[in-house]
Amino acid sequence: MQKNPNVRYLACPMRQMLSKIGDKWSMLVLYLISQSSGGRIRFTELQAQMTDCSKKMLAQMLRKLVENDLVCREVTGDKAPVRVDYSLSPRGRSLMPALDGLVAWAIEQYGVSVTD
Image (cartoon, rainbow, N blue to C red; front, side, top):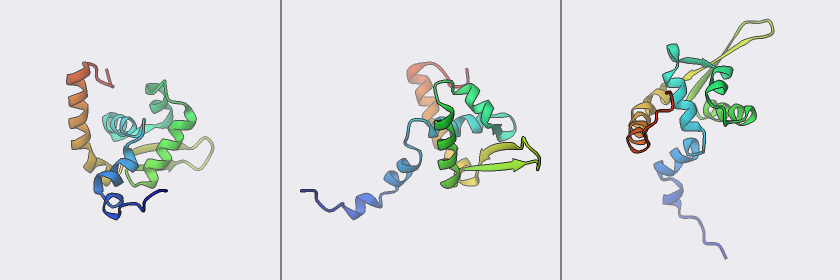
């Protein structure tokens, strides 16, 4: 028999944040967008850097990050093929100091930067 969920646990800010970026790819996508030229990146550029992430998974991650207001998606052009750029939203940019600290720790512990 399962107990009723703890309301304080469910409302925990850390739990809420991890539900938005705690999967395998989200933090990497956010970091790569932040490191991109001009703070904007196209899907194909992300895909070229994340060779172990399927096209389907990358599309799902970007959709989720847009839905969670961490990434902005901008479509330009009215004729096919349209150009789609991704950039960090203000909320996504506010996360970057913490994520940069985590990246610095990872480089210190494991020795290789994701953008090397």
